[in-house]
Image: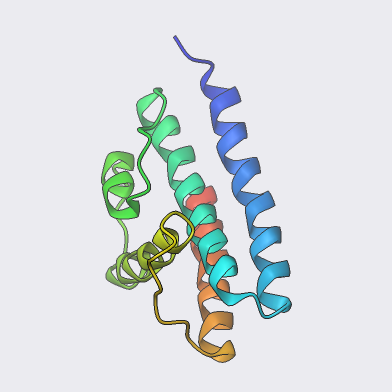
Length: 125
């Protein structure tokens, strides 16, 4: 039996720390690593929900859509599309030959804001 409260605290606290890292990276024009951390924020917040709903350790997966399905939460189409966008940026931190398109500052700032919004929503569920 896992300590559900401890697991939940780990995932959500880690997501909040990663949000701070994403903000710093993006503020310093490090868009690709910043977007990688935006993905981590959402991944960890979803894993928080998976633990909350299932009372078990979430799988070692980085697929946001799959993890969201495990959480049993109803996600809006807009949020689901954004999860798909973030998925391409998690690969860049793991595979050196993967070079996704890096959007301009305005788009990246919008992605950061959407990350904050989804984190807030996931915490409120």
